Length: 189
Image (cartoon, rainbow, N blue to C red; front, side, top):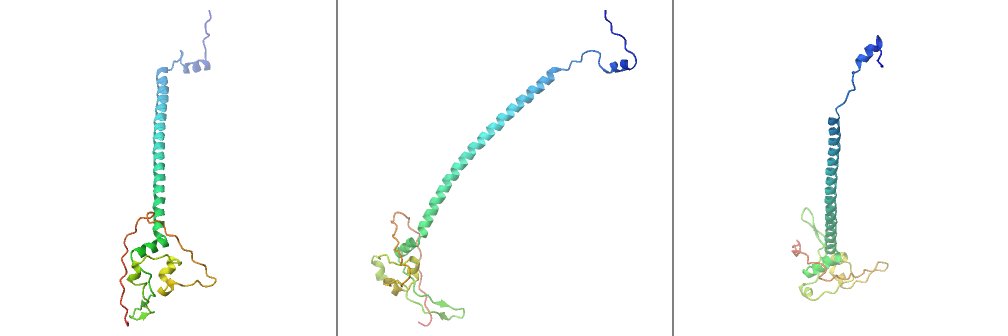
């Protein structure tokens, strides 16, 4: 029969610090805590995953909308470029009855006229007849004196103007009407 010997002194004091029986920790709260943490983590991951999926769908829709708006912007820019083309502006100006301007005259601050004003383009009878395209660039046609518009041989060494083919009328919608300039009287005439 084995009996434990009685401890004395220091050993006896140390044994009193430890509990006499086996201490059993309560396992049920610990297991519940672990299960709740794992379940909460899984639910959090599902919510995060669904939010990311929804965000990716929105991003895809916005990218498609951006592409369509970019295409529309490019189409509108092509229309603006077609309207801004000098040949189209010249053709539209002639359709509206506008003629190339003559030599300009300027009024000084004191009321004096500087320069000799020229007559603007051909008369109204010439506007009713069909106008053949001229071999001048549109910028030169509107700034050149009327006498040089009909027949002016190009100078030696100067680049030859290339006639610009006119676009079909259905390619560009009509431009808004441009009011015709009103001739201003010049003093001394």
